[in-house]
Length: 294
Image (cartoon, rainbow, N blue to C red):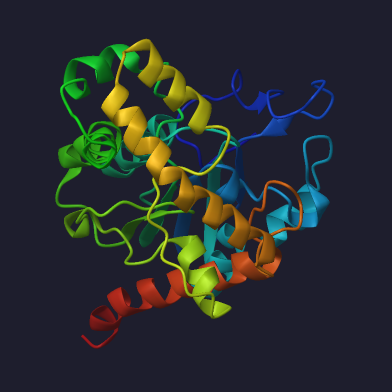
């Protein structure tokens, strides 16, 4: 039974959607409790979950290796903290933000009061994964926008930033990032890191490329195209088609990156998770320094 997740999850704890035949059910929440004074909570999609680690794929889940090698555990080791990982393969930012709100409210209610510090990191996935499901909300607010760039920014504002506005100012030990996508939008007040996970991995390999596309995978692209066609958003779709050159180039660089899995999904390798954990540790360390000098 999971103790660190603040609400009942028995009915949703296991899902079969990530497998071909449902024979390999996966859990979307895991924890490690060692009576540490601090707690780390990481929320995200398959990148946070640890897809490909230890050979994990659609039909095989190597939890023993994955729980050791994913960045949640590596970062917790450096912070000397207990950890809670919340990650759903193929999920959307709407689901990720729902999880953050659950955790934020639990912190405010005192659910984690036994811990001196609670570190929270939220690694967002690409845009548009939920666009078909959320179309009634989106349609009222976005269908007057004429460019793909403005559409992407407004979509991000509706699905992510508007939720975070409820919690401003964001606690200093709560941070946000994007895994393998980016848009040109200032998010400093929300504690967004100044790099994406994939940009960091590219830089470590001296791959000179700046990610500037809001989506890259087959989980997001088909729903977005469907939405545009159904709503006759010709200008938006035209802008998207012009953007595909960036997506194609990004996929090509995934293929040559030694810090991404050789599997088709190209998730970060164990070393890629360690690099991300080191980066996050340095980020949190700078925030802790003033406290240490008092």
